[in-house]
Amino acid sequence: MTKLEHLLKADRKYLWHPYTSAISPLPTYLVESAKGVRITLSDGQELIDGMASWWCVIHGYNHPELNAAAHSQIEKMSHVMFGGLTHEPAIELAKELNAITPSNLQHIFLADSGSIAVEVGMKMAIQYWQAQGSPNKRKMLSLKGGYHGDTFAAMSVCDPTTGMHQIFSDNVVKQFFTDRPSCRFDQDFDASSLKNLESSFEKHHQELAAITLEPIVQGAGGMWFYHPSYLRRVRELCNEYNVLMIADEIATGFGRTGKLLACHWANIEPDILCLGKALTGGYLSLAATLTTRDIAYGISENGGVFMHGPTFMGNPLACSVALASLRLLSRSNWQQSIGNIEAIMRASLVDSQNLKCVRDMRVLGGIGVIEMEDDIDVAESQRFFIEKGVWVRPFGRLLYIMPPYVIGDEDLSKLCEALVDFAKKTEMKSK
Ligand SMILES: Cc1ncc(COP(=O)(O)O)c(C=O)c1O
Image (tube, rainbow, N blue to C red; front, side):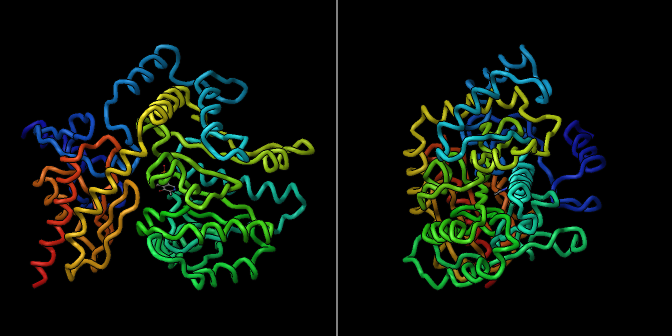
């Protein structure tokens, strides 16, 4: 047996990969290294990365500046507890986050993953209303088609059909849901898409602590782009009905949609903002939940404290890399890169639009989507893409790419071509 075969056998024997069976898992491919937008497999094959490792590696892999930040911090300390101790990387990161996020968000809680940042946001909202003497306001309103993570509270606000609610029906807290915003980002706004939203606020506001949503782009729940006017109306309704707004920008934050935050498309400020994924340029797991002075002080009045404190809170290594990543982003011309990625994807993916097996094609910022009529066979599609020299991992009916911002035109064209070829192959098979 070769070393590669040994390793893959051990991988199947001991490891459980995400969303797959332990008995007959989806195939895995052994990675040797990654640099820029290329992932090198152990057999030497190079793949152009279309996924940015679940959307977080915005500057590319193995970036010298991020490497330097990690090296220099590791020489000082990789970790110290955040209870009673603090450190420069966390303080400098907080200052930088404060400078680039809406001015109403003054308090930053550092968490260790996106799901936890969402849980923290929900806890902040619930604790705030308790402190205000409104303990009945403890439910969330959420959008169908949303995704906020895999932990229990995060799951409770994920789409009730695709979000595993059936499997865990007795364990997941029942929340309120409103229809997925039907008004597309790229069409005139249709005010009828607000009906269900408005009636949900009217009916449930006395029980609602907050609405939890992904602004503009619903990611893992369907890669759906909705109209900024919808988001603007959410903000108005939150003000009218005294409901907090939690914006989950874990996938959309740091430029992915063409704005630094997706909330900027609607010129709104949420009460609670969750950031993650690209925060560290995809190097280490770190997330942040930002909130207003009003909420932070509201919770803290009369001796109140916020009840959360993970072991790896504010991890110095992750904070140092995050700080380097934010500085790199602000120095780069990311708007131009995203505009260029968007233009190339629009021009290239359009070739899929007339195929019968394709339901829809949509592009926003650095996100390109071909929505098929039927579910895609993941194992088969991965083999296809690897043969083409690209790394793309579809889910459900969705073929999509979210490449690192540093991708070159030629590499991006190859990715798009591979996506369209896969759709064409599916069309041929169905004939
Ligand atoms: C919008 C959104 N929120 C939360 C999460 C959960 O983040 P994590 O996987 O870091 O827990 C994700 C992950 O895909 C996400 O896309």
